Length: 307
Length: 279
Image (cartoon, each protein chain N blue to C red):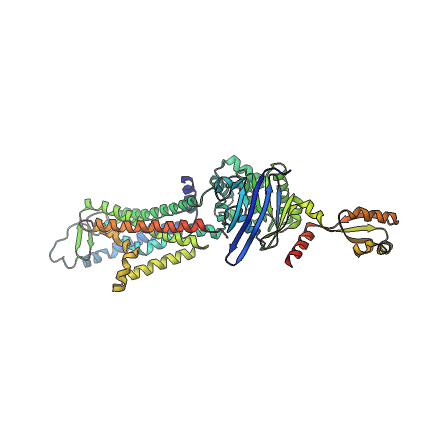
């Protein structure tokens, strides 16, 4: 079903003196994926990304990008990758244009004024192309970071915490940009983020990492549906409904009740069944709201793995 | 590689600190020249006092050549300091600014990155020494004119005729470039180890000062060490001002200093290729 493997990590490890930052990690990213890379601080996300970009040498394991070994074919692989690693830093004493020109030359790509201005326009910095980067706000640097990642038209874009320090508007813009790059430009995107809702909205597949190890990997929708959901039923009379529920086995699944709302812990296939039960017992249901989010899922996974 | 060197030179000369060395030389050389124009005759009389009774001195001895020769003595301490200001920042500056991440995720080998930065540092060193030469000889000629060069050596007072001087200066300045390139290489090595350029500048200067002190103290224990200290060879530029020029000493020094450059650069390259970029 999946197409070509863009990233393939096998038994990847990195040891910093006594600390094992990444431990026997395996993951696969396919062409066209928006791949969410999740984990708490210190989980090993940045170390993995730095190893993907050959900034850090792995202690063990193998990284393949576009089917080629990173160890053996680093330069040809990097031609097809655009990346932001943590916060984007530039030569502050140079203009935005000149920074892109230098980075473009290093990437052996088109550094014509037309191309650079097109990329700057894409990230909304065309009016500040002459300004020195040291005068830029964090959000502007972040956008320039995206510009440098896109300048050489790479196949794979690696974004490490791209919305860190951005205001809600900036975060929305980045989200829209990811949709555009994935949907229109057909790029493969590897997105590391601690903002889980962000990953939930844009990623189709994801991995959760903790203490350098993979906890879970799969499609976002499957992972969210795999486990028990928190579901709110909005009813006309919660006290009557609660009484009827407690007379049956559904009572064990009731978590809380308020004026017009009953909250249950349910398997995905039980939602319709419970709804049917309410209708059969004369309880009017005005809304069924699954409240389970990636955030809850993430926290529950973390809880299990901290034991 | 030429593109990379061009980029590195562009970055280097867009930084304010790169010009500190040139500004310092531009200020210092005329000050020394003015001081010599005021006090120089006394110094010259002092140098020649023992032979003034026996010889008659005719001509312009207080000239640009003598002044340039005296200024070249500043190479030991002052120019190395100016060189390290830029060289110590070549790699550490990228770490401080966080730009390693952008630079090293480009399709360029680490060998090429280090080599281009190193060569940019050597070109900077060359330009700095050449600027010293242009100001010493150029402005010196305007102020003092030219003439014979009188040089005080430990064994004798040597006088060079004016048509026997320029090649000696050219050789001495080329030697100075090699000698200062050792300082560049040392600062570059330290620059690869840390994430702040202050460390490489201070460490390089501390090493040079310590080595010069060891070289200057004439005790047996230090005599054994001296041949292994690069500072022992930095003063060999003056061998071009022997009569005849002591080319054997000069070539030996060039060999030792060049070996230092190659070894220091190789160590830097080895360290940088193994380095994990964590900044």
